[in-house]
Image (cartoon, rainbow, N blue to C red; front, side):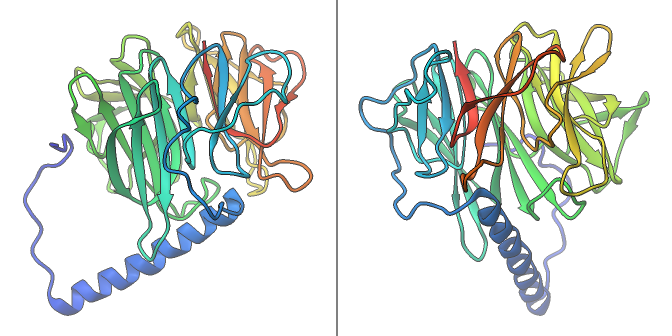
Length: 340
């Protein structure tokens, strides 16, 4: 598949000693990042089921999520008993689903860790697989199920430091076209074309038209919210200090995490941005959320936080208008995705 972002003159071949040095350095760097990821995510299960049980399919209304204990996807009713979960989904490190499509990111640790981005149909059968270097980070599917995006950490394991590099891809299932890296998309900042060698993208979210999208871009120690256009293959900066955007079902607001502190243990807070007025609203969740929040409906957001009683993570919800209080809805869960 063609890489839309690949262009330019091929680099001059490295000599044998230089090649060895590059390989060794990359191995050490990525191995360290993979170790940090595994520690952060909790113990990985010893048995990793590659496929879902035959009876486990995409069918809403339901909340789909990853069970950190088993590493497999489960689902539960969107409302009602939080303990009424159904197990038996595929084994994933990150998961998201919409319409008739699911995206499963599965890590394969090693000296040079890699990630499988696995596209699944309504019966959660594999229809396509893309292999990328790095460890899983973000996964998104557009409301129609047509557009998919994933982000991996190429090095490091935390947005709280500047010592990381990401690679974000976009896949159009209708055309089969794959953009393996967004880094060369023409970017406009303050009305001018922006170029920098340290540009990183992550956290894509798609509009209902499958053309407009939002994402985070970082460069020179600053993060920005960008609005992109697939048809024109362009992106423009809307504002600074907005990470991991998530577009509401009605396409009028963006949930995002905003850096509010230099404390590496609690740097972020969840906000919602009105795209018409560009007014932001802090949500009632005051704990630091390192997640790309998911909308359960136009008024409620779901997100993962470190769990209690030794659990790797729990899923919480909070109203999207700044009122109310956070509520624990799914103990022992992460990667929430609402199928309506």
